[in-house]
Each structure stands twice: as C-alpha cells, then as structure tokens.
Figure 1 (cartoon, helix red, strand yellow):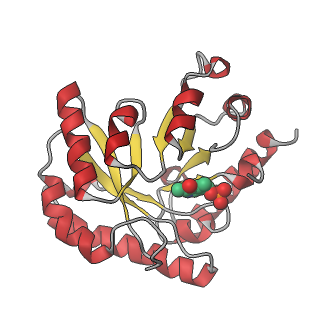
Figure 2: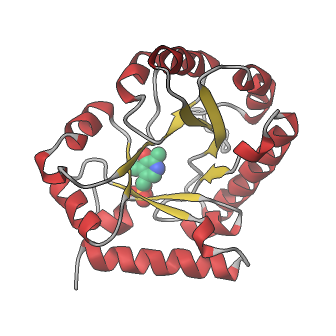
Length: 229
Ligand SMILES: *Cc1c(COP(=O)(O)O)cnc(C)c1O
C-alpha cells in the first residue's frame, strides 16, 4: 500500500497515539481530510481507504467537487473550513455539516437568516485569532466573549465550538491551542446550552499532536495526507 491510503493509516495511528498519550479517548478526536486544491480523484482514493469526513476552504472549488461524478454515490461528510463571507453563506448552507470559519456577528446573522428561510438548523464554529497576527482571520478572544450572548440568541444556527489556525512556531502554537480551550470553557459559562459547545477545531499537518494534547476534537490535516499543494 502506498500514497494516500498509507498516509491516512499513518495519520490515524498518530492521532490515536496522541490521544492515548494525553489520556483522552481516541474516538473523541475526528480527522478531517483537507482536500483543497486536490482533485476529486484523490478524494475518492481517500474515501476508498475509509475516510468519509473532508474539509474544503474555497467555495467555488468545493461546489464543483461535491458535484463531481467521481464522488457520486459516496456518502461523504463535508466541513467548510475556509473563511466565510456573508455573501457566500447561501451557497454553503445545507451542503456541509459544519462551518468552521465564521468570524463576524454579521456573518452569523446572515447564516441564521438563511437557515430560518430554509427551515433547517446550521452548526458552526467561531474562528478565533489566537496568535494576534494581523494578517489572520478570526475574532479576538475578548470580542468573542462579548459577542457570545448575541450569537446564542440567533435562531436556526447552533454554535458548536471554536476554531483556530495557530502560529508556525510549535511552542507558541501549543500555547494558542490551550488558550482556545480556555476560551471555550469561558464561553460555555455564558451559554444557555453549554452541552452543545463540544468542538475545538485546531491542529493541522505540522501541529495536530500538540492540538490533541490541548483538547482538539477536530484536526484538519491536508498536506500529510494528500501531499504538498
Ligand atoms: C489548508 C488548511 C488546513 C490543512 O493544512 P495542512 O498544513 O496542509 O495540513 C487546515 N486548516 C485550514 C483552515 C486550511 O485552510
């Protein structure tokens, strides 16, 4: 076995080991195979190797791939992990089981409006800028705490947790993962239904083990499965 199937085996083993080493239940960490820029044929290969959960970041590319003939009949679960602007919400809603990249109250309001209009519920995560880098998307932690009450009041949508992209430096990244977990704990104390806030989406190819140590429930791995982009 080689290529995507063996990469997946290896990543699943490392996810499992990292969870065990942290005293966590390995089944509490889900692996999202990030397939952005990769063709549907590679997604098919991963699916045939047992992977069902995929993440995409670019709207147009995602829409094309999820309708690709190569994936017809494959019961895939999609997460949208890219930054989502308000005007793109209507194209994503209903096609993915979780939206990771919401970082403005106004975008959550649009998501709520579209969900109500369609009579569905949409689950989402707030993207947090834990590194303080100005070039990164994401709400500042204090901003998120201040927005929480408004977000909890929006109909048709459910805040399920937080997402972050950490700094490249490994020790700094681990601090940021811990900060995200502490922020989720703080936001839970404000929540009418804290039991819904179960998700921490953090960790990528280079840092998912540190993220698992700090409580990640969703790790987003692209390069280590599909190769360099
Ligand atoms: C591309 C991407 C990933 C995957 O990154 P790798 O380093 O290739 O594992 C994870 N999360 C987000 C939001 C991404 O855009």
